[in-house]
Image 1 (cartoon, helix red, strand yellow):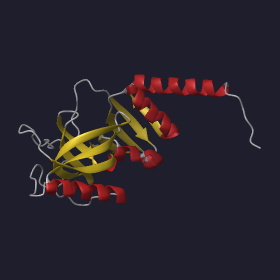
Image 2 (cartoon, rainbow, N blue to C red):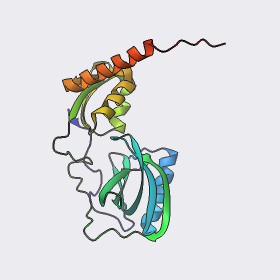
Image 3 (cartoon, rainbow, N blue to C red):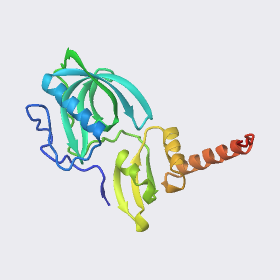
Image 4 (cartoon, rainbow, N blue to C red):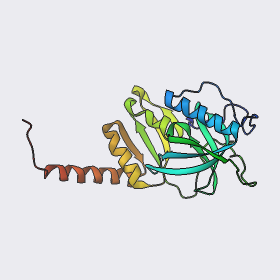
Length: 216
C-alpha cells in the first residue's frame, strides 16, 4: 500500500514572486485552467477574491471572500491557499471545486499571523476522532480515489481498488455509497456498512408503495 496523498511535488513552501509553487504533470479541464489563470492574476495584483466553493466532504456550496496567498500544485491537482474571512483561518481550495470566482477591487491582506500550510505529510490533516472507512472500489468507481481525499491505495485483481477514506459526516458518506450502487463494498467500519444497507432497504420499501404510471 502507498499514500494516495503524496508529498508536494516541487519546492514545498517556497513561493515564487507571483505566489506560485510550480509542479509537473498538472491535469485540469478548460474551466479549471481559466480559474487558475484568474487566481494567478489576483495573486499578481494582490487582490481579494469572492467565490462559490463546493466542499465535497459536506456536499455543500458556500460563498467566501478570501485573501489569496499562493497557488499550489500537489499531486497534479491545483489549489489556492488563502486566508478565508468566513472561517478566519488559512484554507486550501481545490481549483476544480471553485464554482464561481470574482476578483475584487479591494486588496488582499492576509493577517500577519497567517502562515503557509505545512504540506510535509500531504494536503489533508487528520482531525482527532474523525472516522475512516475502508472501501473496495470497482473499476467504474475508481474516480472516487481521485476526487475525494484517500490516504491509502491498494491495487486488487480485476482493476478493483481498496482505499482508506476519512469522512466527517456519516449521512453524507451513506449517500455517496448509495450513489455508487454495486460499484463499492464497505469493508470497515461495520456500522457504516449497516447504515448503507438500512438506507437502501428503506428506499426499496418506499419505492414499492409508489403508484405505477404508464407513459402514453
